[in-house]
Picture 1 (tube, rainbow, N blue to C red):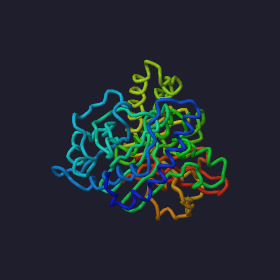
Picture 2 (picture 1 turned 120 degrees about the vertical axis):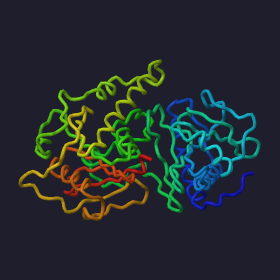
Picture 3 (picture 1 turned 90 degrees about the vertical axis):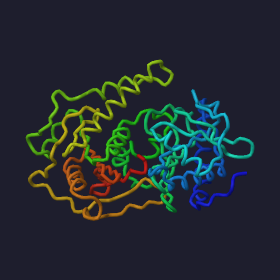
Picture 4 (picture 1 turned 30 degrees about the vertical axis):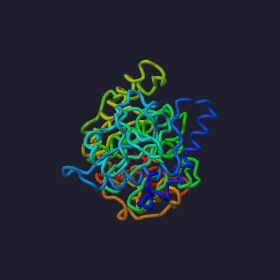
Amino acid sequence: MSSNPTYQAASTVAPIVEAHFARHLQEARRLGEDDLAPEPDARSIATIINATFWASFRPEEGRFPKISLAYLPPEQAKLPLVFEHPLPLTAGVLTKLAPAVERPEIHLGVWNIGDELKVWGTTRTVPSFCFVVEDIEPGLLVVKHRRLDGFGKYANVAVLKGEQVKVIDEKGTSLPDCPSLLKALLAFTAAATNDPHHSLNVLVQLSASMRAHGHGGTMLVVPAGSERWRESIAQPILYSVTPAFAALTKLVRHEVDEDDPGRRQWESALRRVVDTIGGMTAVDGATIIDDQYQVLAFGAKIRRPDGSSPVEQWVCTEPVVGNLPVVVHPTEQGGTRHLSAAQFVSDQRDALALVASQDGRFTVFAWSPCEEMVHAHRVESLLM
């Protein structure tokens, strides 16, 4: 049998993760879904997390590994690369394999062979609700799964950083009971990203792309057909777009079913457009899109309209179990980019502001009518 985990957080989170997958797989089966991943048990979960954690600290040729492990048998993978002799699941083996599998969307396949977990090969495809552990950086792991019929970003289940464990809040209990705010932040709640029938979440895909380029940036989401947002933008806008760039709008409206032969081509086109728009946020200033995903401008400078009150505090939450809302001063969280985004939302209360920091933090600003102030929702735990 595999040795007991020496990384304590692995044993702590394993029963919680086991219950998460059992619940979602049971519900998917009840709905008549097939092509589902095997249900991971707590011991296997802890063992895989343990090996990945210790491997994350072991550089190979001066580079720390970046690996993704998926729990499934070879026969459930499409076109897998299978080793003639399965390898033991150890930190040493994972470190040696890491250079070959560090590119995105490549997973090391792990399965029970005999009475031990072994690395059987690699795969680019995994079934729905497949248990995946990704090594982000030394000591930082994310437990996630492929959403049912989902595109793009996997749904995160838990984030482990050293001995700190953050379990994603599936039910949105970390948010205040405020219907208007919940509606505004729906795309960034775990319930939305885990919903079996929510196959495409555009704002999450855009946010992940914004975060990935590493430059930091701001995206403002304004109501389609309204020009009121211009009151909060310095004129003229250097990179105003006319007519509005609607490539993403058209792709979203013509989403292709999972079993359609053109699905792969549609996904590829969607990724390219999402990354094109996400890349615009690397330019100094804000990228502005409407709620139909049409790009209106980028490089825009946010200004406070005459007569409006400056933002002096906001409520901050994070979508993890046990999180409590905290009222903070702008100087306590973020710099100029965060303050200008909060000011925009305070003045344009039907808008959203998405802010990526260079250090990987990601905040969604929305107006909370129940609290009568700006609400900052820290969502990087959903985007890793």
